[in-house]
Length: 292
Image (cartoon, rainbow, N blue to C red):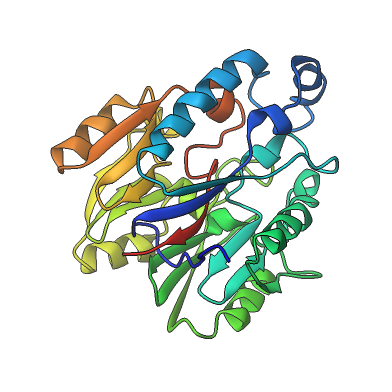
C-alpha cells in the first residue's frame, strides 16, 4: 500500500500525484479547439508545455520520493493537469471533491479509480448539492484546517467536509471576495501559501481579514505579493519542505523576499502549463503523503 496522509501544507512532501500534459492536453490540435471553452487566457503550445513540465518534474524529483501519474481518461479534459482540486488526502483516506466548474465534474471519479489501484482508501465524498474544490482547503496544521467559502465551495460542501473530518479539532471558515465574479477561479489558496510554520506568502487585498489577523496572532511573517505578481501567480507557492519551495518564473519580488527569509526557491518556466490555465505549482500537484 502507498503511504498516504496529507494534513499539512509544509511537512516534507513524500509522494505526489501528477497528470502529464501529454495526456491532459493530448495535442496541439486539441488545445486549439478547446482552450477558449475552458476559459484559458491563451492557447498553450503543446511542445512548450511538455518542455516546461519536464523542468517542473525535475525539481520535484530532487525532493519527492514517489511520483505517480494519472493515466489518460477520456471523460476528463485540459484542466485535469491541475490534480490538486478534485481530492483531499487525509490520514483516514481520500475525500473526493464535487467540482463547481462543470467541465471538471468527471475528474474526481477518474482520480478515485487510480487511488483505488494504489490501495489508498476512499474515505468519503462531497455529494449532491455540496460543492467543494481542493484549492479551498488550507491545512494550518494537522488539527486545524481553514476552508474558503466562495463561488467554488459552498456551505453544503463545507458542512459535509466538516462531518467527514470530525477527527480534526478546528475547522475555520472564511468568506472569499467576489473579485471578478463566479467565472474567475478564486480559491483560498489563490491568496495564501504557507512556507513554514511561521512564514506565509499572501495577497492581502483579497485576503479575509480574520485569516490575516489569525496568521499574525500566531506569529507568522507575511510576504506581501504585489498586484502585478499576483496576476502572474506569485501567491501560488508549492512548499516541498519547510522553507524549500517552488515558484513560477517571473515573480522577482516574491522570489527575493522568500530568499530574504531564508527560503530555498526553485523557479520553473510555466507560460503554457500554468499561466494560460491560471494554475500554479500547487495546482499542478496533489500531495498524497507529507510527513516529518
